[in-house]
Image 1 (spheres, rainbow, N blue to C red):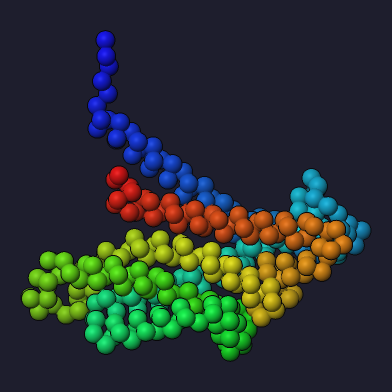
Image 2 (cartoon, rainbow, N blue to C red):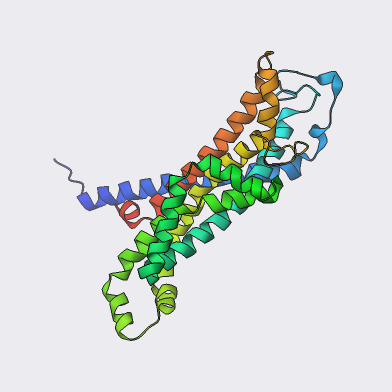
Amino acid sequence: MTITVPFDHVSRSLRNNRRQRTLWGIALCTLFLLAVIVSTWVIGDGGLGPVLTQRNQPPSVAHPFGTDWLGRDMLSRSLHGLSLSLRIGLLAAAISALIGTGLGLAAGTLGGWVDAVITWIIDVFFSLPHLVLLILIAFAAGGGTPGVIIAVALTHWTSLARVIRAEVLQVNSSDYVKISHRFGRSPFWIARHHMVPHIIPQLIVGLILLFPHAILHEAALSFIGIGLSPHIPAIGIILAESMRHLSTGYWWLGIMPGLLLLLSVKSFDWLGENMRALLDPKTSQG
């Protein structure tokens, strides 16, 4: 006897499995990132103080990330520094996403000279060296935490603006938007009722994918001394301090915080890709 399995049943099962894997990926990445941010309130500031009798200890059960040249627990310092970098990166990425969404929406909806000017500004930003532009803006803004947030926010909106503009132009050519134009609806009414609901998935995915870039560039600015104060345990400052001790064999001072930063950045990357797969009709239904 031959047992025939309907194709629709197999296809539906594959879609459900793919959707479950996507949801599990989103849940795990979100849980890890929330754990990093909340961990500073759980562990407190106990491990940030110097303990000279425990200097330069390698990773162990008591100190999973080892201790530094002052006896400070590197796990506590790394979590505090990464939590601070995450909060700064999230704020800067959110501001940058709002800028990119607003300009992309204006360019695609208004068109004409507005579209030409915004497209020209995007091309100018893409033509400039990214890190140099970051350093110049942070230096002009006075450095410190506000300078880092302003620099990251003003340099990371271009890719999202280009994506939003393309989506709006596609929707702008649809029949229901043309009918709204014939009924005399204003561009702002059309943008609010037709464009904004359509670009929300792109905005969410773009915002999440902006986070890793914002975090890495915040760490880079702190690493070269333009960002946060050296007395603050930011992840870039921790990595910069560890460079002086790596040649003496204290490898854990740079490798362990670096791995934690890399894992956090990849978590945001995986979260964004899974959100894109979940929200995109082609992948969520196919």
